[in-house]
Image 1 (spheres, rainbow, N blue to C red):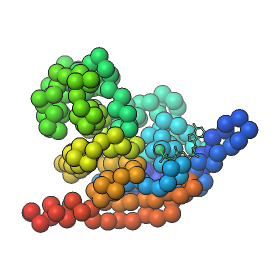
Image 2: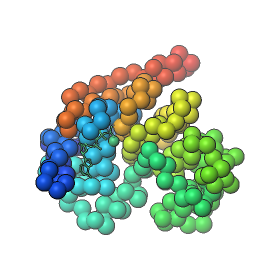
Image 3: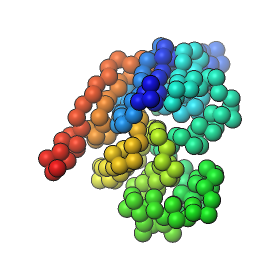
Image 4: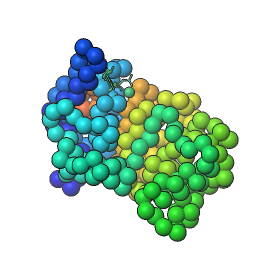
Length: 240
Ligand SMILES: Nc1ncnc2c1ncn2[C@@H]1O[C@H](COP(=O)(O)OP(=O)(O)OP(=O)(O)O)[C@@H](O)[C@H]1O
Ligand SMILES: [Mg+2]
């Protein structure tokens, strides 16, 4: 279905470490729909990062099926999976992974270059930074930015090519609540204005309060899946 971006069916993921096998995912089912602002919660070790890595084609399931944009990831070659990651997915990690020797603007330009954007990439990178209220920070290197600003540049970089689906693993874990709010509002703006879909894992109640849907994992399975009105969206609704 066109509005179903991810279909995970009976997904199992085992990790083999020496003599021990860890059953990280144990028959997980999950669909992600266009426009979801989906928060994945659950105790440490419940499989959140493992799931995001499978959806993001960074790792492959032991069994079961993970379809992204209608394509079964296990049927794609390594190269096709890399192509999918580069062209259609955006990633935000807990550690920002900005390139330290490049400025904020160059960090964004760099991914556009990898994606094959030509001469207009400087202009586009600048436009993305401005769109996210980071226009003034373009010429600073990561060590000249606060943690919150670095994380926002990391989001700018992840969304510069307007990927349909953005995956974020604990994106606010290193941020205070003010910076976390700014980040979440930025992500929601992108969801609303640019038709993007977000899936993020978190332990942070603030992040959950922004989500439109909350999926809880326990021992590698989905134990609850709730649609909700985010508090912040209700606030906005009274403005219109
Ligand atoms: N590469 C790996 N090798 C071995 N075991 C792993 C590996 N990655 C994850 N695991 C195990 O799989 C299980 C699920 O881990 P995962 O990282 O997905 O949990 P999580 O829900 O993201 O936890 P947290 O909230 O602490 O980030 C854990 O028991 C973990 O130890
Ligand atoms: Mg994790």
